[in-house]
Length: 164
Image (cartoon, rainbow, N blue to C red; front, side):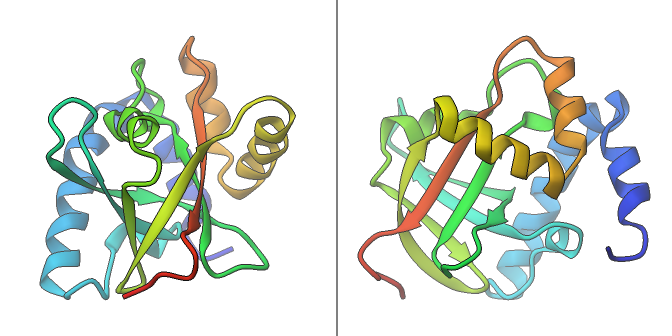
């Protein structure tokens, strides 16, 4: 585990972080990602991260969101996204966008755009992935305990080897 990760996990579990982070972390990530032409994502220094672009569920306008992700072992084009919303009460908007257009999403992963198919995980499959997510980033348990909704989990897989 990288130095400082436990401290970051502890801080990220606080309610203060949940209030501030959604307004600061994505803005910094978008700016640095744009300035480095997709090569750097600041938050990825602690957790792997990608940039999700998907049309808005209502507007149809492209929405770009930097997100932590859990790359799946054994494939270079499969990721788990956790709709934790930093432990805030509502589902993050990007989750509704993925549900409305599961084949209209693209992720930017390490500077490459990858068209993906998104699957909302449910039942036993969700439970298995949730256990893995808790091992990957323990603060997710704090986020879930703080909210009444079930945190949405998605598996994103590259569509038929399409990359750019």
